[in-house]
Length: 399
Image (cartoon, rainbow, N blue to C red):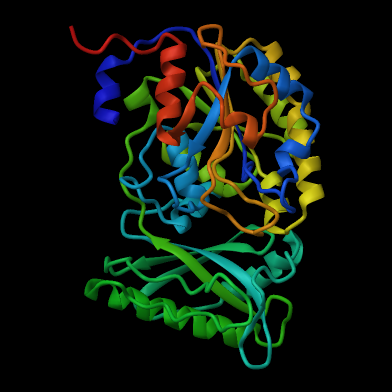
């Protein structure tokens, strides 16, 4: 797709906005009931739907449950199956860590374990920033022969581990089992050349466990997304776009930086993100706005809180529309139904607004209405080429 698009790119003064409500898609809690999006009052998004076109987006492929990294890479026009990025790399870039070519990065979670070492809380009660920084300070004393160790706080219960030294393989399995009631997994090497890295990570975990054993709730760590930074062509190189990102959470800032976006100061919340969009409107061709709170509510299994967060997301759109984007795409990176308390494989509602779109007959923004939308069901990686076309940024293909 990138090779197809690159020679067709036309540069002009059009503006494209991609607004992503993380984990937007949902499920009914009871048979016949509404999803979170269908239950929410979304007058602004509904007005956009009535005048434009909608459908459902597949983050990766049918039946595949995506992480946040693959979900966003698809929205940025990159095939997430081709461009597989470790979560540790994204978290490190998100906090502006200077990640070297031989560095191995891992996303860490503080968790709570019982006397038998079984996980009772995968997020250590969502430990707040200040106590989490104090825990990170303890882990900074860890020393491992053969590697330089960096431990940096990200947000709440999340941290980044970076190992710098021997350029061994980085294919090491996650230690987070993804559920409670079991012990953390061992960091198993998935290739022979990754055995040295697995041993280094084992030493880190053993030392961390000894340091934290008497300090609940954050008395243990789990690691996932262990990887090195791969080469990824920038959005400027492939799409000819000068792109700016307004994301509060570090990982999404890391995703934006990975594909060459300029990461801007987003403020502290959705209202301030929309205000920042206005301030930077003249400076960029493409804007990525990321709204996290829908996903967090879904993962907590809180249906009503997710409904409220969707309504908060909707309230920002008059300010966005007033700026007059040539193309506005509204969607999510994946579904996070409160019913499942996790990411899922379900397609995500998507809205495309432009004065060159072919309006369909849909009148409300929701999972069931979008089933009959004019976009149909399409892979997320197709949305950016569609945005470029509607913005007059793609030339004709062939004679």
